[in-house]
Length: 149
Image (tube, rainbow, N blue to C red):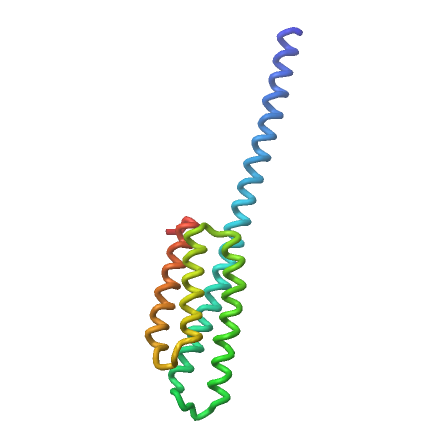
């Protein structure tokens, strides 16, 4: 083979290698982008359920042990229970996309919500504080995963 043929062969080889490398990098970038978006969406759903549960528990506490409207109290307790179920579902999804530290923080938040759900009404203010602390811990861990901190 002459010099021209070697040059053409080398150019074709480099071009092919460039295409392969570009395809791999683009696929990895797309996968990373999709994973970040899925993690963000899951975190938002989990945090919305957490806030909904906390708000309902706080409202239930404010009604007192003998609420004037028992149906309102029952409705708030149902909201806490429903939000807890949403938390569990979101946590399952979160553990698929997030690091171990984010998953552990999510589990801790779920445990704090379970303690709130099952706790005595008189203990709700202290339990709400522990839920808020667990929620902050989850947000901090997620920011590290998403590299926004």
